Amino acid sequence: MSRKFVAAVLIIASVLLATLSFYAWQIVKTPNLQVGENDKDFELLIPRGASFETVMDTLEKHNVVNDKMSFRFLARFMKYTDHVKFGRYVIKKEMSNHDAIRKLRSGAQDPMNVTFNNIRLKDDLIARLGRKFEFGPDKLDSLLNDPVVCQRYGFDTTTIMCMFLPNTYEFFWTTSATNFLDRMADEYKKFWTPERQQKAKDLGLTQTQVQTLASIVESESKKNDEKPRVAGVYLNRLKKGMLLEADPTLVFAHRDFTIRRVLNVHKQIDSPYNTYRFKGLPPGPINLPMLSSIDAVLNAENHDYLYFVARADFSGYHTFASTYEEHMNNARIYHAELNKRGIMK
Image (cartoon, rainbow, N blue to C red; front, side):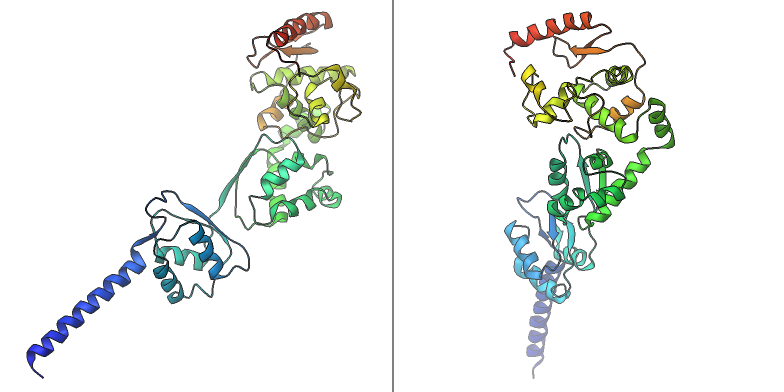
């Protein structure tokens, strides 16, 4: 065998080795996920019992993988095809095959931020929160409408809404429904410090009653600097044994949140939430009040106001009055402006 032949073989072998090495490097290290037009991270949700093909179907459906063949090859080589782990994984922009598969194979889930606010009905709460988790709305619905479960946390099926304090919380997508409720109960206990509990007792209200009143205050005013004054009005009415006559409770009773102007016909509804007919607080909150509204009740202004009506300038603030005569004069001004603007219902 001539030296030239040997040299040629070595050169060819070197080229092939270099080519294979470069291709192997490309398979492992070159960005292959969320490349090109996909300029955002991708949230990959892998349900329990999912196969590798299920994962690939999701990735292909959303055009996450650029070179599918190289991804499949490395997935088999790294034995991920037989070790798929359920969970929520964030696929980063321009992620390599190796980094993505290593993450998926290890089951290193990414937590998610769960934020909820501006919720009126328990059904809305169930739908919004349930779909954020693997357990789904149906499971959450069955728990929150189970009297035994609600009693375990110190509530009934109506007041269980109070346990959910609007905020942003970190969870894993695979958190069970029971563990989710346990966490909400822990957050509820943290919020209700001994100081807040004492303030509620000083007002002669339970924690649930404070939050129910806070939900009314929340509906009446979005101005944090005004909420303690609004809370003071309702507390004065409770002390005097007056009807609360809170328009938002009528809207809630009718379940018609398009109502902008409460009329006498609305006041005829036979509902425990009709505070124009039944004294005291309604049986539960009419929304999930913000923490600022709860604290507004606990730190309500001490004044002699018994009435208030929205300002005619539609600024979101209210005009307060101590006497009915003064209040009616303020109300006429406001209603005249409603008529002027054609707001009839």
